[in-house]
Picture (cartoon, rainbow, N blue to C red):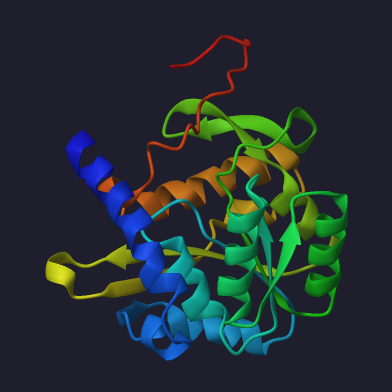
Amino acid sequence: MARLSLKNTACTALEMSKAWMPATHKTLALVTQTEGVDEFKQALDSDEGVILLAPHHGNWEIFGFYLCTDTPSTILYQPPKIPAFDRLLKQARSRFGLKLAPTNSKGIAQLLRALQQGELIGILPDQVPNDEGGIYAPFFGEPALTMTLVSKLLQRRKARVFCGFAERLAAGKGFKIIVKEAHAGIYDNDLQVSVTSLNQTVEQSVERAITQYQWEYRRFRRRPDGAKFY
Protein backbone atom coordinates (compact mmCIF):
# COMPACT_ATOMS: atom_id res chain seq x y z
CA MET A 1 0.00 0.00 0.00
CA ALA A 2 2.87 2.37 0.77
CA ARG A 3 4.45 1.72 -2.63
CA LEU A 4 1.14 2.29 -4.41
CA SER A 5 0.60 5.52 -2.51
CA LEU A 6 4.04 6.82 -3.52
CA LYS A 7 3.40 5.76 -7.11
CA ASN A 8 0.09 7.61 -7.22
CA THR A 9 1.62 10.74 -5.71
CA ALA A 10 4.27 10.66 -8.44
CA CYS A 11 1.53 10.21 -11.05
CA THR A 12 -0.30 13.26 -9.72
CA ALA A 13 2.84 15.38 -10.08
CA LEU A 14 3.55 14.14 -13.61
CA GLU A 15 -0.08 14.65 -14.67
CA MET A 16 0.05 18.37 -13.93
CA SER A 17 1.42 18.99 -17.42
CA LYS A 18 -1.67 17.25 -18.85
CA ALA A 19 -3.95 19.28 -16.61
CA TRP A 20 -2.33 22.68 -17.10
CA MET A 21 -0.70 22.87 -20.53
CA PRO A 22 -2.92 21.44 -23.32
CA ALA A 23 -5.99 23.14 -24.80
CA THR A 24 -8.84 23.02 -22.31
CA HIS A 25 -10.91 20.56 -24.35
CA LYS A 26 -8.01 18.09 -24.32
CA THR A 27 -7.69 18.32 -20.57
CA LEU A 28 -11.42 17.77 -20.07
CA ALA A 29 -11.34 14.84 -22.50
CA LEU A 30 -9.18 12.96 -19.99
CA VAL A 31 -12.41 12.38 -18.03
CA THR A 32 -14.00 9.21 -19.42
CA GLN A 33 -16.47 8.32 -16.63
CA THR A 34 -18.56 10.20 -14.07
CA GLU A 35 -20.61 9.43 -10.97
CA GLY A 36 -22.90 11.87 -9.18
CA VAL A 37 -22.38 14.75 -11.60
CA ASP A 38 -26.09 15.12 -12.44
CA GLU A 39 -27.04 15.70 -8.79
CA PHE A 40 -24.16 18.16 -8.44
CA LYS A 41 -25.37 20.14 -11.47
CA GLN A 42 -28.92 20.18 -10.12
CA ALA A 43 -27.58 21.79 -6.95
CA LEU A 44 -25.77 24.41 -9.04
CA ASP A 45 -29.01 25.22 -10.86
CA SER A 46 -30.76 25.96 -7.55
CA ASP A 47 -28.74 29.20 -7.10
CA GLU A 48 -28.36 28.46 -3.38
CA GLY A 49 -24.61 28.32 -3.68
CA VAL A 50 -22.44 25.21 -3.64
CA ILE A 51 -19.23 24.44 -1.78
CA LEU A 52 -17.08 21.86 -3.56
CA LEU A 53 -14.56 20.00 -1.42
CA ALA A 54 -11.54 18.69 -3.31
CA PRO A 55 -9.19 16.81 -0.95
CA HIS A 56 -5.65 15.74 -1.85
CA HIS A 57 -7.07 12.70 -3.60
CA GLY A 58 -6.65 11.42 -7.14
CA ASN A 59 -6.05 14.34 -9.47
CA TRP A 60 -7.72 17.30 -7.78
CA GLU A 61 -6.80 19.70 -10.60
CA ILE A 62 -8.71 17.73 -13.23
CA PHE A 63 -11.55 17.21 -10.73
CA GLY A 64 -11.92 20.95 -10.22
CA PHE A 65 -11.54 21.85 -13.88
CA TYR A 66 -14.23 19.38 -14.95
CA LEU A 67 -16.85 20.49 -12.41
CA CYS A 68 -16.11 24.22 -12.46
CA THR A 69 -15.88 24.84 -16.21
CA ASP A 70 -18.75 26.97 -17.54
CA THR A 71 -19.82 27.79 -13.97
CA PRO A 72 -18.91 31.01 -12.08
CA SER A 73 -16.36 29.60 -9.64
CA THR A 74 -13.98 30.91 -7.00
CA ILE A 75 -11.31 28.58 -5.66
CA LEU A 76 -9.37 29.03 -2.44
CA TYR A 77 -5.66 28.39 -2.95
CA GLN A 78 -2.36 28.65 -1.10
CA PRO A 79 -0.10 30.96 -3.15
CA PRO A 80 3.24 29.21 -3.79
CA LYS A 81 6.34 30.82 -2.35
CA ILE A 82 8.04 30.78 -5.77
CA PRO A 83 6.62 33.70 -7.83
CA ALA A 84 7.14 31.97 -11.18
CA PHE A 85 5.19 28.93 -10.01
CA ASP A 86 2.42 31.18 -8.70
CA ARG A 87 2.14 32.83 -12.12
CA LEU A 88 1.99 29.42 -13.82
CA LEU A 89 -0.71 28.24 -11.45
CA LYS A 90 -2.84 31.34 -12.00
CA GLN A 91 -2.43 31.13 -15.78
CA ALA A 92 -3.35 27.43 -15.87
CA ARG A 93 -6.45 27.75 -13.72
CA SER A 94 -7.68 30.97 -15.30
CA ARG A 95 -7.91 29.16 -18.66
CA PHE A 96 -10.94 27.36 -17.24
CA GLY A 97 -12.51 30.58 -15.99
CA LEU A 98 -11.68 29.99 -12.34
CA LYS A 99 -11.16 32.92 -9.99
CA LEU A 100 -8.52 32.33 -7.32
CA ALA A 101 -8.88 33.51 -3.72
CA PRO A 102 -5.69 33.47 -1.61
CA THR A 103 -5.69 31.96 1.86
CA ASN A 104 -5.88 35.26 3.74
CA SER A 105 -8.63 37.51 5.08
CA LYS A 106 -9.15 39.15 1.69
CA GLY A 107 -9.48 35.75 0.02
CA ILE A 108 -11.97 34.52 2.62
CA ALA A 109 -14.09 37.63 2.05
CA GLN A 110 -13.94 36.93 -1.69
CA LEU A 111 -15.19 33.37 -1.08
CA LEU A 112 -18.08 34.57 1.06
CA ARG A 113 -19.17 37.14 -1.54
CA ALA A 114 -19.16 34.49 -4.26
CA LEU A 115 -21.19 32.12 -2.08
CA GLN A 116 -23.71 34.83 -1.20
CA GLN A 117 -24.18 35.43 -4.93
CA GLY A 118 -25.12 31.77 -5.38
CA GLU A 119 -21.86 30.82 -7.05
CA LEU A 120 -19.67 27.75 -6.71
CA ILE A 121 -16.66 27.91 -4.41
CA GLY A 122 -13.93 25.29 -4.12
CA ILE A 123 -11.86 24.39 -1.07
CA LEU A 124 -9.21 21.76 -0.29
CA PRO A 125 -10.69 20.58 3.04
CA ASP A 126 -7.64 18.67 4.30
CA GLN A 127 -5.16 21.54 4.28
CA VAL A 128 -3.68 22.05 7.74
CA PRO A 129 -4.89 25.45 9.02
CA ASN A 130 -3.27 27.77 11.52
CA ASP A 131 -4.31 27.59 15.17
CA GLU A 132 -6.99 30.27 14.75
CA GLY A 133 -8.53 28.58 11.74
CA GLY A 134 -8.93 25.04 13.00
CA ILE A 135 -9.95 22.64 15.72
CA TYR A 136 -9.02 19.01 16.29
CA ALA A 137 -11.32 16.30 14.96
CA PRO A 138 -10.73 12.61 14.22
CA PHE A 139 -9.49 11.65 10.77
CA PHE A 140 -9.17 7.88 10.31
CA GLY A 141 -8.99 7.53 14.07
CA GLU A 142 -6.25 10.11 14.63
CA PRO A 143 -6.81 13.68 15.88
CA ALA A 144 -6.12 16.10 13.03
CA LEU A 145 -6.15 19.88 13.10
CA THR A 146 -9.05 20.57 10.74
CA MET A 147 -10.22 23.80 9.15
CA THR A 148 -13.35 25.46 10.49
CA LEU A 149 -13.75 27.60 7.35
CA VAL A 150 -16.37 25.43 5.64
CA SER A 151 -18.49 25.19 8.79
CA LYS A 152 -18.33 28.94 9.41
CA LEU A 153 -19.24 29.73 5.80
CA LEU A 154 -22.32 27.52 6.18
CA GLN A 155 -23.29 29.47 9.29
CA ARG A 156 -23.24 32.65 7.19
CA ARG A 157 -24.91 31.31 4.05
CA LYS A 158 -27.13 28.32 3.37
CA ALA A 159 -25.44 26.23 0.70
CA ARG A 160 -24.98 22.61 -0.31
CA VAL A 161 -21.66 20.87 0.11
CA PHE A 162 -20.26 18.24 -2.23
CA CYS A 163 -17.00 16.31 -2.10
CA GLY A 164 -15.17 14.08 -4.52
CA PHE A 165 -12.13 13.38 -6.63
CA ALA A 166 -10.91 12.38 -10.07
CA GLU A 167 -10.09 8.69 -9.77
CA ARG A 168 -7.13 7.56 -11.86
CA LEU A 169 -8.27 4.60 -13.95
CA ALA A 170 -6.06 1.63 -14.69
CA ALA A 171 -4.13 1.15 -17.92
CA GLY A 172 -4.16 4.84 -18.85
CA LYS A 173 -7.93 4.88 -19.43
CA GLY A 174 -8.33 8.40 -18.10
CA PHE A 175 -10.20 9.56 -15.00
CA LYS A 176 -13.54 8.98 -13.36
CA ILE A 177 -15.14 12.00 -11.68
CA ILE A 178 -16.81 10.93 -8.44
CA VAL A 179 -18.80 13.58 -6.55
CA LYS A 180 -21.25 13.14 -3.70
CA GLU A 181 -23.05 15.38 -1.21
CA ALA A 182 -21.24 15.75 2.09
CA HIS A 183 -22.15 13.97 5.31
CA ALA A 184 -25.36 15.46 6.75
CA GLY A 185 -23.66 16.51 9.97
CA ILE A 186 -21.60 19.12 8.15
CA TYR A 187 -24.67 21.40 8.19
CA ASP A 188 -24.94 21.25 12.01
CA ASN A 189 -24.62 24.56 13.85
CA ASP A 190 -22.36 22.92 16.44
CA LEU A 191 -18.84 23.61 15.18
CA GLN A 192 -17.34 20.39 16.53
CA VAL A 193 -20.10 18.27 14.97
CA SER A 194 -19.74 20.06 11.62
CA VAL A 195 -15.94 19.77 11.49
CA THR A 196 -16.06 16.10 12.50
CA SER A 197 -18.53 15.50 9.67
CA LEU A 198 -16.19 17.32 7.28
CA ASN A 199 -13.50 14.76 8.05
CA GLN A 200 -16.00 11.92 7.75
CA THR A 201 -16.91 13.21 4.31
CA VAL A 202 -13.26 13.19 3.23
CA GLU A 203 -12.84 9.70 4.70
CA GLN A 204 -15.74 8.40 2.60
CA SER A 205 -14.09 9.81 -0.50
CA VAL A 206 -10.66 8.39 0.35
CA GLU A 207 -12.10 4.92 0.97
CA ARG A 208 -13.20 4.77 -2.70
CA ALA A 209 -9.53 4.64 -3.77
CA ILE A 210 -7.40 4.64 -0.66
CA THR A 211 -3.98 4.46 -2.35
CA GLN A 212 -4.79 7.51 -4.47
CA TYR A 213 -4.98 9.74 -1.40
CA GLN A 214 -1.83 11.80 -0.89
CA TRP A 215 -0.80 10.26 2.41
CA GLU A 216 2.59 11.92 1.90
CA TYR A 217 0.91 15.23 2.72
CA ARG A 218 1.68 15.76 6.42
CA ARG A 219 -1.94 15.77 7.55
CA PHE A 220 -1.06 14.89 11.15
CA ARG A 221 1.96 17.13 11.65
CA ARG A 222 0.14 19.16 14.33
CA ARG A 223 -0.77 17.24 17.48
CA PRO A 224 -3.16 18.24 20.30
CA ASP A 225 -0.42 17.81 22.93
CA GLY A 226 2.12 19.79 20.91
CA ALA A 227 4.29 16.72 20.34
CA LYS A 228 6.10 16.25 17.03
CA PHE A 229 4.71 13.62 14.69
CA TYR A 230 7.07 11.96 12.22
